[in-house]
Amino acid sequence: MDHVDQQENLDLLQQLVRGTEMGKNTLEQMLPLTEDRLLRAELLEEQRGYRTLNQKAHTAVAALGKQAEGAGALEKLGAKLGVASRLMGDRSTQKLAEMMVEGTNMGITECVQAQNRNPGASEGAKKLADELLAFQRDNLRALEQFL
Image 1: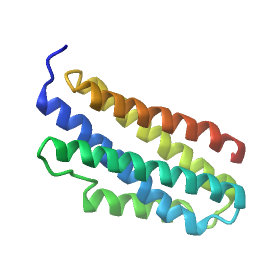
Image 2 (image 1 turned 135 degrees about the vertical axis):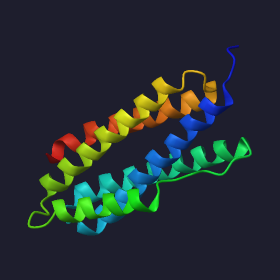
Image 3 (image 1 turned 45 degrees about the horizontal axis):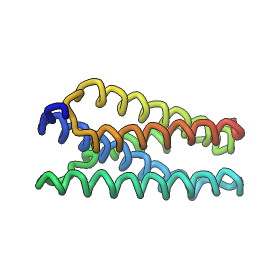
């Protein structure tokens, strides 16, 4: 078995906490704006998935005896203002889906970067990161129909 670098393990898990939290919070903000029944159903399914993955990441961090560090207040505010400003004047299904695709792509990029920065993380942390990536890639495919 490869040596597990505890700091890299924690760093990867903390990124998973932040990434799943951002997905969860963004969906919370987008759902009330969604009028299309099918898009709403898709976003609710994604929200459930992010909540599940967020809980797994929190549990893994706690198992290391550490406190999970979610997105900071400034990061959350920036995301919230970004969504609000980009939807001014256009709350169409297509625009909402486009924004979700952009956010999901950002999440994928951040997750892959965290994996690359933390090659010494545990197999469990790597598996959870892979699970998040697979989930996000599935979400992209599901959102394509709304673009």
